[in-house]
Length: 131
Image (cartoon, rainbow, N blue to C red):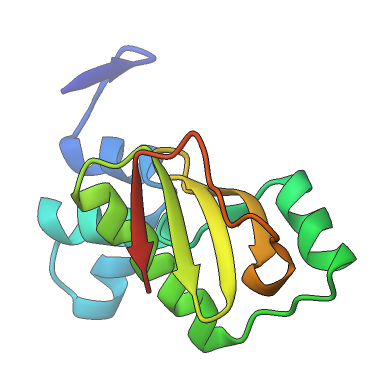
């Protein structure tokens, strides 16, 4: 329990406050209280999509590389797999595209088309995933 303004807050009220109302949404949909695992799954699923750094976004734009939804899904899945293996800086290959991803931050650091790379050498990575 937490005390706020002289009043006690229940665990449910604290969950609602810190999980941006996701517990309320779950309650409204099912009519039951949300379990801790359901709330944790909701929070984790909202964090699965990779972000692109400014540098990576510029690289994609400069090279006119557009990702399909299938490629984005595979990139996200590759990032999840890398995280499960304890990789921090991963090379993720999707079709003819190569991405360096900072796995703990879920951020694509740089992106390139494999055809454009003349030497095909990747440094400062501790794992690779072919997605």
